[in-house]
Image: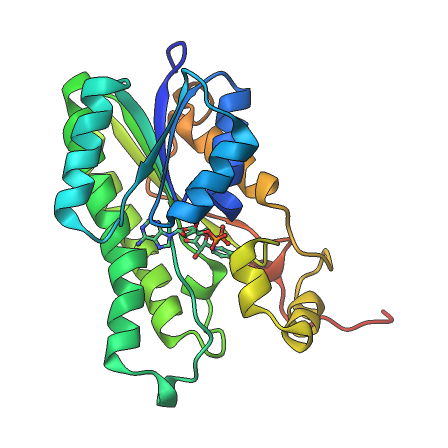
Length: 254
Ligand SMILES: NC(=O)c1ccc[n+]([C@@H]2O[C@H](COP(=O)([O-])OP(=O)(O)OC[C@H]3O[C@@H](n4cnc5c(N)ncnc54)[C@H](O)[C@@H]3O)[C@@H](O)[C@H]2O)c1
């Protein structure tokens, strides 16, 4: 990457997105932290401090006009985008039989349509420079059938295939598109979704027998953004999951 590339991180006020913002700032990049939640954005601003190389945007990634305006404003006032990390997401553990159409649509709207809209608008800007990188947050729940994840899993499975399609369409534009499928990562979302019993079950399925840290996902995102390190990688989904997706039966005492 050139010196001081500018990246946009959605969901940048919390969890994995916030860790990406921190890591990118530490690497000397210019960063836009975008989030729908004003209170989390204010807390992120308090934690990171204001600086020339950091901008906060309050946007809903599922709002097509807002995304287009936001990307245009970033390009005009802050810096030409070199990359995007789509970390904005919502989750819910609901049995399929109890999932309403409205719940299903809401999760698809944020996790899948929102990811698409941000990727599309960023690509329109980045294609003029013939280079760029997009990193989407999928999930191991988009690869395996996890209980209670009909809508969430479908949205993340959608992100996996969206990543492949965009990688193919954007390759001639010089834009790479990859995804990360995290396993259980200790973030506010997971603290809300994983009650104690669920935590035990997850731990029993993760060979490393621990939850990951947001910074462990952020370092993969930075690798995928950096063309000098990952220039020949596109269309891929990388599990950062302590071995969860690799494991079959895990017997203790062997
Ligand atoms: N934490 C995990 O274990 C885990 C595992 C697999 C995948 N993921 C994915 O990683 C991403 C980040 O998750 P996290 O655990 O850091 O969650 P988090 O809740 O800590 O952070 C997500 C952020 O996205 C923001 N957001 C939600 N809806 C938005 C919208 N419409 N527009 C803009 N911002 C919005 C939230 O306000 C929040 O700040 C999500 O896409 C999630 O599905 C997380």
